[in-house]
Length: 99
Image 1 (cartoon, rainbow, N blue to C red):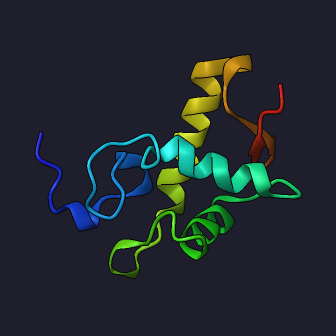
Image 2: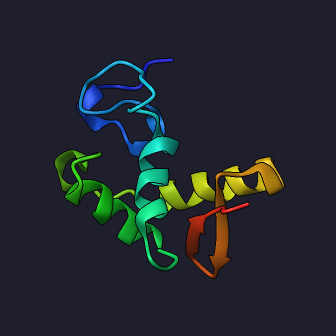
Image 3: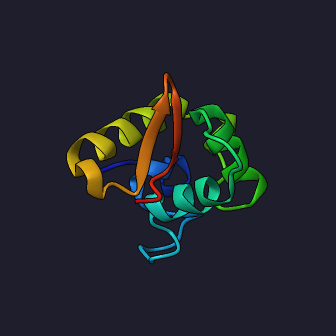
């Protein structure tokens, strides 16, 4: 399946700044780095902003992808259950799962 230009890829696509797949470029790894250092749960807009600030990901053409990130985090927490890397901490809020 063709996804278009690499610079238009979202944090969900597993690509980072035109690079191939690496552990560093995995979307969970970037979100995990942001949430692991957060002092309190974060909403998706704050996660996207923190990833951009830390240069872990930049928004293509200024587009924000909070809804895509939110759906991915919900899917991850639902599918992985207690083994999920992330936990839903409240309405619209996520944190690292400190098992």
